Amino acid sequence: DPTKAKQLLADAGYPNGFEAILWAMPVSRPYNPGGKKMGEMMQSDLAAIGAFGMKIPTEYGGLGLSLVAYGRALMIVSSAHPSLGALLSAHQSIGVPEPVKVFGTEEQKRRYLPRCAAGAVSAFLLTEADVGSDPARLGTTAVRDGDDYVIDGTKLWSTNGPIAELLVVMAKV
Image 1: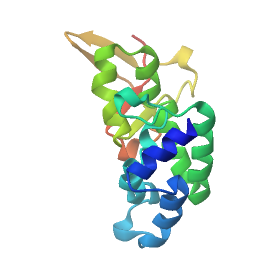
Image 2 (image 1 turned 135 degrees about the vertical axis):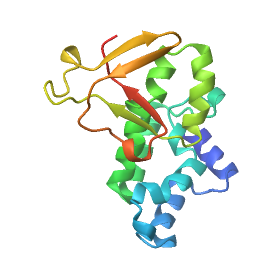
Image 3 (image 1 turned 90 degrees about the vertical axis):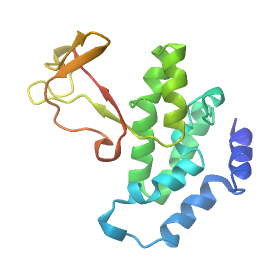
């Protein structure tokens, strides 16, 4: 519900929503302090307005936006800088929040979704040298070792990897 999201943003101190904070951010700071990338510079501001939890249900600390409202918010974010839209989209669609929301246990949802909504960026690792992005032919494996999994393999890149706290690694079990 866009009205609900706007009220949440107003309650957080951003009465004009995403537009106000996003258009102010590039002007309110030097473009590249300390060699940081734009996404890193704005990560805390985006977290403050709930941007990392747009698709996460409110009971787990997210904004609970519909897909239409989420798409509109990404459009606004991307108009400030395309890399920000890519950062938020990858985090919420192929990163930790979506698979945990859809397939996770209640314990996993309580553990990870509030953390993601608060701004813990997640990364996605799929592509491998010999198979590209074909999940049916993955060479990376995940073998159970007690309560953990040992992952063995090589990925070519990691979407959001340089700033991620959490990972989704595609592997054969």
